[in-house]
Structures are given as structure tokens and as C-alpha cells.
Image (cartoon, rainbow, N blue to C red):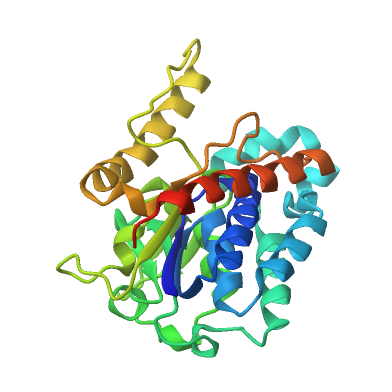
Length: 296
């Protein structure tokens, strides 16, 4: 059965998608279109490029995620400048290694730009801080930036979507008026963009299966806020959830596979082999339970 897939952000926790995808593949479902934010955009782009679930697992389990931590050269020589320079660069790491890895792996399937993918098969969600709006790539590129969508790099689009604020530096994209927009993580405005694969009237071309790395929206754990840093984290997390929680409450919640991942943070790039396997098993467990009751 043909379906469409939407994948939420969640950083390294997205390894749990592998287990869920294994079960979905075993049950005979076949994805046609993909949408994703942040880590979900990485998953969506690789699937859209033609990688099988097994290939996805092989690549994502063997990569050294520490390679994505690429501070500017001056910090390698003078580590104490890290926090001082954050004020000017607006991010600790460049994100260039992440984009390079994405570019290399996508080229294994002959994918460089959106022209190399079936039309409409991939939607990547980012946040434009300058314009103050959600950016859907490739759809919005011509209207707001005068860029031919077919020529735009898929790897760059995904890297922008995964640009966690203050962790990775924002990407600058020049708009029509010559004004440079700062592009960051799509999760800032829409961490779970189910809406991007729906028609304007809310209809769907085919069933949409969403995968979200969290508890359902009605489950809100209490937070301990003891200092300004924890308050900022709480503000950012609440802001990310607000848009999608409102949408999910109005949508058919039985189309969403929630995968709550405990004990792993978004940027825990130094996971052990056992932790990686546990994430995949968690995805399988929740995926199996979900498919038992999913009504298409």
C-alpha cells in the first residue's frame, strides 16, 4: 500500500525511526512522498533519494557523529574563544561537515539537487528568522529568494533544516531584495510538518503516516527550572511544540506514530553501540504497536 511519510526533528534520537521503518516495510507499506524537519529531514531526504531501510541503517549506525562537530579554525587553536565568538557567529559549529556528509551520501544515489528527485517527492522545512516565517524547500525558493528550485542542493536544504540554533551557525540565503535571511532549524516553527503534504483544503492524496519523536501532545512532563539556561531551554522547547500541538489536536491522531525516547538528548553524538541498538528497538516496539491499530 502506498503512503506518504512525515518525520519530526529530534537530533540523534532519530535513530529510532530506523526500527519503526523496519516494521512498516515488513508490513508491505511503500512511501511515495516525504517531508521532514531537522533530523527528520535527513531521514526523509535519504528515503526520497532511494535508500532502502537496510541501507539507511547501515549508514546511520556506522557514521561517527562527532565529525559533525566542526568548530572554526580559531577555536581549535584558541579554545577559550568559543563562547566569546558565539556572540558574533550565532553558533558554536559551522555545520559544513554535516552538509558534506549529506552531499556525499546522497550522491551515492545520484542525487545532488531537487531536479534529481521525483517532482514533489521531498519537502524540507526550515525557519527564516529574518522574514519571520516557515520556509518549505523547494516550494518557497522562487517566490522569496528568486532561486530555481530545481538547481538547489538537497544537502544544503537539509543542513539548513537541521541548523539547531546556537549549536550550528545559521545559513544565509539572499532574498529578492538583496537582503540576507538567516535560516535555522525548521523545528523552531514546525517540528512536525504533517500539513506540508496535505492539500489546501486539508484533503490527502493518500494516507499520511507521521512519525514524531515525543509523547503525544496531551502528555506534558513537568520541568524543573532553576536558572536562566534551563528557562531558555524550556522556552525554546515550549515554542517548538506550540504550533504542532495545536495542529495535532485538530488532526487525526491515529495517523501519528509517537516514539517517546527517554534518556537521550538531541545532541548526544557519543552514543554507545548499545544505546544505538536500544533506540532502534524502541522504534520497532512503538511501530509494531501502532500498526496493530492504524486505520488508513
